Amino acid sequence: MASPIERAPAWSLAVVAMLSVQVGAAISVYLFDDIGIAGTAWLRLTFGAIAFVLIARPRYWTWSLRELRAPVLLGVVSAVMTLAFLEAIDRLPLGTAVAIEFLGPLTVAAISSGRVRRLAWPALALVGVVLLTEPWVGSANLAGIAFAALAGVGWALYIVITQHVGDRFAGLDGLAISLPVAALVAATVGLPQAWGHIDLQVVAIALGAALLLPVIPWTFELYALRRLTKAAFGTLMALEPAIALVIGAIVLHQSPHLPQLLGIACVVVAGAAAERTGRRDAELPHLETPTT
Picture: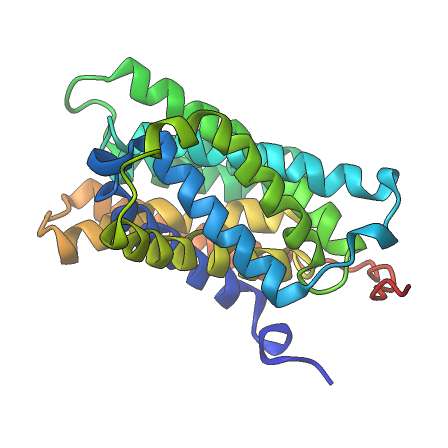
């Protein structure tokens, strides 16, 4: 019998994941002054790794080194993506950083579209992202843009590799392998920053941030990518800059301009159309839990 998360519409899993990512990113900012940006990434990924290991209880010894390559690579990519994104939002407004980062999944959507007419949805999403970010307004932070672009490359690779891992590992086993790897990679720069500055308040905030990002969104994205093409998922992610803008309006009282409202409309239409036309037709490989 399918679990509730398996019965939920794929688009709803992606939307909940995006909401969780934005709230988790906002909470993470409160840790920057205490344990640094890299320290925040490391602690968040470490708590996420512990959660996935406790939930999935993976038996690592049952997989060959060849089978482990993809989730290990996913862990490395996840660490780089997390570090780069946190560096970006320390220098740029959240909506701007997310919009630049979105160029990664947009590229995946464009490349993965098998039919020319489906390229219309990534194109419409790109128009929406430009309207949302209003690049003609304000001055540019080149370091922030560079980190956001690096996060976008990581996001594109994350989509491709996560779908591959989700097709070949049952349940959350793939994430229970990749997250400890991500935590170890982040520890190389994050542990020195955080060492000596961790107290109960930091732990409490980091636990909440880890639940919101990566535990909830990466779980939901894994299940969504089992039922959507990379093109559909990549275009559906166009909703994320819009979500960041809406959260800014509600939480930070930032009133969007008319072009930004038009941008929201563009990305919502593109995301919904991509989801309707982007379901995976091919049958997934049969997934079995490894046995000893």
